[in-house]
Image 1 (tube, rainbow, N blue to C red):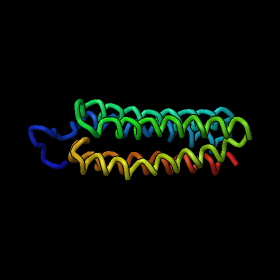
Image 2: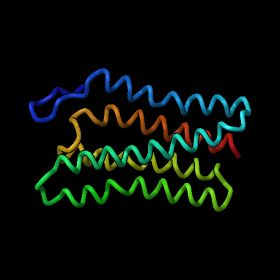
Image 3: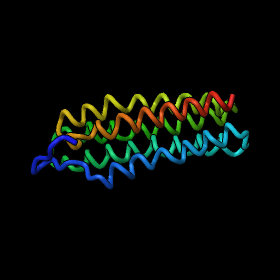
Image 4: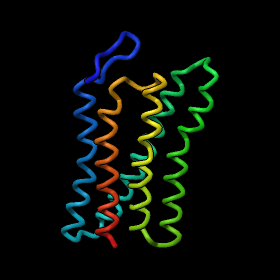
Length: 153
């Protein structure tokens, strides 16, 4: 991990372990899809949408930490984008009946959160070693979600 500074502490091992444990539900959903378990598609889709929204919540927390800063509003605006994207994907998948494409879109959206996370590190909003956690988690969940979409087709 990147060394901590007094104003930017390093991520604790517990946070890192729990972050990686967050991949387990999607791994289980993919395993169930391989076993042709019908509920697995809905589980994979719901979990991916939940985590995409959760990422927006993390960004919102970073924005609220910028109290009194002129950039707080812009970061707060950016923080609601994952929630709106998740809702739009859910709506589109429901209307069209193509959850498999919803999974692919959600996995892609999760991958597209990485440039924002990188910006948050550069600006000092996120911990210095944030990308050490975010890259494998976003790539892992994004790839698993896209795989779930392919297996659901």
